[in-house]
Length: 70
Image (cartoon, rainbow, N blue to C red; front, side, top):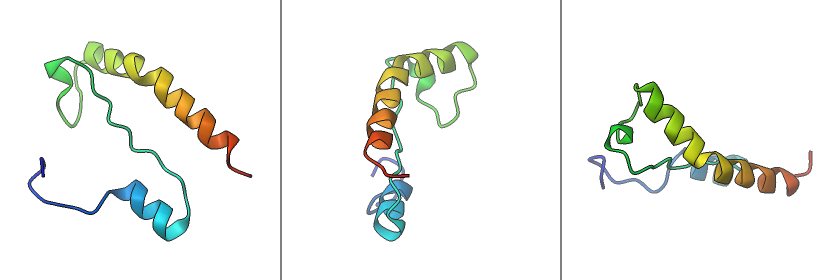
């Protein structure tokens, strides 16, 4: 309850349950206080956040797409 209300999941959970669609909603954290906002305005902090998290997001997407029949 960090955002002021409780919930039974988020959009990715609903998409999988209701539509059978796999979705990811990664938490992109870094140890930089300027990144702890909903929308990162500072370009350096944004680039640092993307760079730090890119490899695991890319790996997750590759694994997901390898297991899905198109």
